[in-house]
Length: 221
Image (cartoon, rainbow, N blue to C red; front, side, top):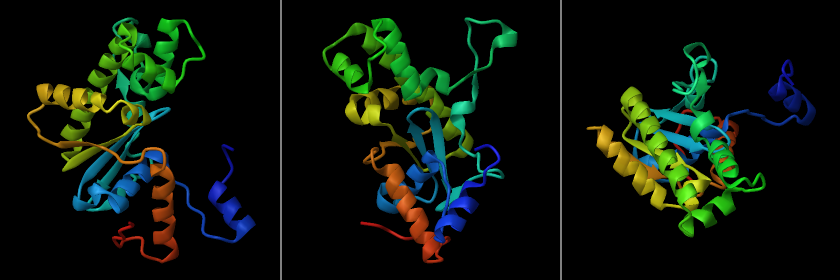
C-alpha cells in the first residue's frame, strides 16, 4: 500500500467523503467533542495501545503538523544502558506500549499466549512479577507525561489506555510519580470509553466535514 492513495481510491470507488486519520488524533477529537476535554482549549490525549501516540489540541483545534506526524511520541528515542552507544536507538513504544508490556509479561511468565486479560488477572491476584512490570510501566508513562507537559504546557492530559481502564489504580500511581518529578500541576485524567474512543472520534471528524464545519465546535451527547 506504500504508493496507494487510500483516500483517493475509496472516494472514487464509493463517491462519498473519505478521511484518514491516526488513532491518537481520533481519541483526542473524541475527548474534545464528547467529554471533559471540551472544557479546555489546549489538551493532549496520550493513547497507549499497540504503540504510543499523542493527539494534540491547540485552541480547540487538532494540530497535525506539516506531514500529519505531530504527536508520534512512541517513536521518540530512549537511552538503553544495556547496549552500546552506536546501537542505542530504542523507541519509547518498545518499552511502554501495551504490546511491549504484554511481551515482557509473556517472557517473565514463559507464556506466549498471555494477553491483557491474563495480565489484569495476575495483577489483581498479587503476582509480584506483574506488579513489578506494571510499576515500571507507570514510571515510564509518568516520564512521558512530564515530557509532553514540558513541551506543550496543556491545561489537561488525558490517557487513553484499555489496560489502565481495567486497572484504574495505575492512574493514581502515574499521578503520584508525575508529581514527584514535576512542579507543573497539569491535570491528568483517564479518557472515557477507550474501546469506542477512536470510532466516535472518527464519527465526529466526518460529521464536521460533511456539514462543512471543520473549524466549528460541535458537542455530541
